Length: 455
Ligand SMILES: *Cc1c(COP(=O)(O)O)cnc(C)c1O
Image (tube, protein in one colour):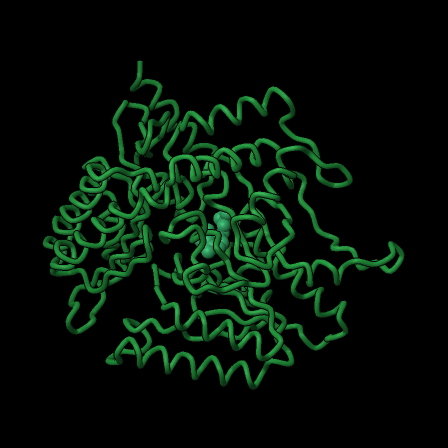
């Protein structure tokens, strides 16, 4: 019976699993939601209840679940070879995907290095940038710069550039100091300024920090246009362009971390396209396989690639790799996902849905009493909740207002996830107008239900 199965699974989960980013003391006191299958943009639990996947299974699903083309591509590849290594060998899907990625990413990126997670794609980019300058004889370029509260994954190199006090303070002694630039996030850092003034102020700060330290900076890493895990902090195309120009002027490599923003999330295939930016290194993961399998890629230029070329015994090799680098199943899924973009003209089809999303946020959700700020780039949305938006008084952390809202939404059949008191929405690109309305109605009703009790 279904409920016997649930109880058994719950007991086993509670006995054996350690969940990521989860206070397990709380988890062990609660009934877990256990997903057993999926259909389109919905996840289905062990009791058969359906939930709209409002965060794309943590920002990675693009075309819906059990999408037939992707499932078939994986099955077909499974009949040939599930895995063989890229260390000293090659395989067909990884070659084909590399060519495709070079074609669709910004000009100048010509080489693809695979790994298996966003964090590893970032590690690869940092190590490539670092070694590049060592190989070039600029041995003082040993630091990285990044934006305040940027998030680049949870491995040590990634938290070094993407430091968050809450997530990472225990590891402080292990980290080297990166230079932090304050992004033009008006709501938090440039209170009272106009959008334009904030860009001028943030641009000036970036210019000063970079001018003073450029001899030591190997690379600047940014999440272009929107800092996802910080709480969906958006910045403008102008600011991104300022950073690109500063990097060029001062001989600093620019790393764009498009792990979250890549593959249509911001309305264009890649966020940096909107600023017409060509990064020196580009990190891709989450949506790369349509959100089906763990695969990541770091792309770079011929200039960086060629600095590593030398006779074997000069040992200029990039000594980095992971066991599942270039996994054929992941690459086959990614090829199928990119084919869907092409055949179904996904980006064009999104336009009316994006407009509907914008209109409803402006006209409806922005009217809620405790919604203090709404930030959005394409399909990435953050709604920041506050006790008193006017006076900018936040809720007490003990109120756990974000968690309460997403639990309320879950009762109403929608999966959301909070970042503190920011409710994030990131639906699959395949969401239709009707499903989008469900997502927004439930988000609105859940915020209303929770905040009117909590004020
Ligand atoms: C999620 C994320 C990462 C880390 O990706 P993982 O696959 O979880 O390691 C890195 N950068 C950004 C911008 C992300 O959103």
